[in-house]
Length: 275
Image 1 (tube, rainbow, N blue to C red):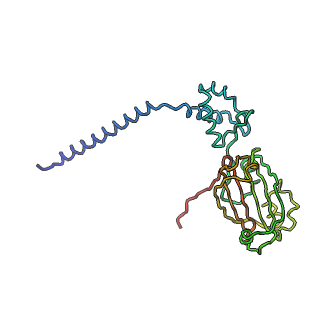
Image 2: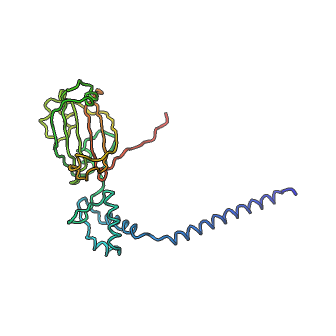
């Protein structure tokens, strides 16, 4: 028996009906699954907390209501609420202060990996009040690694500048910078608890930071734990950067220890136009 065009058409419609019927059954099962889905109490409490933070436009340092009041607001028990709070504490959005209460930590400081803006410039652009505490500003002799980086002989004098950085009243990171004494012999006359190192380089000495590279890794906090207000062995970001001047010479080597719960590292990606 030979197939005719009419028979082929009927066969095609038959298969089409079967396919549509299968999709209909799958959709029905999906709807049934959705109807059976119930939001877990912990997820509901978490969403309620996040909605409260958004709707009330809390600022960093603002205190949340007491646990009992929040339980009454969202009809949940205390263990469920605490589970949601702990998740936001781990993400850096909330801070629990024993004997005081629960506080909103604010959104994270955004540290851009491209560009050569100073900490002062970046925090100002983000509208964040900032502060720096001077930890050390001294002359040291270069060891093997620093001598290799700056291409100088072993024991060459370097400035070591270390600062504790704050934004929104919270400690974010420790910066340790190294640069040549020979190029900046009297730079210690500036107060780097208030002034920008890059501003001084450019405006006082005519040396312009033009390019650089950063290497990012993770480590566990050790002797810096107390300054960063973290338990010992807490994982943190470690960034090592090398900055070069307009002549391509090594200008600064910097090592930064960063709290990941308060700082977000951002890298911008762009499409490459066809040549």
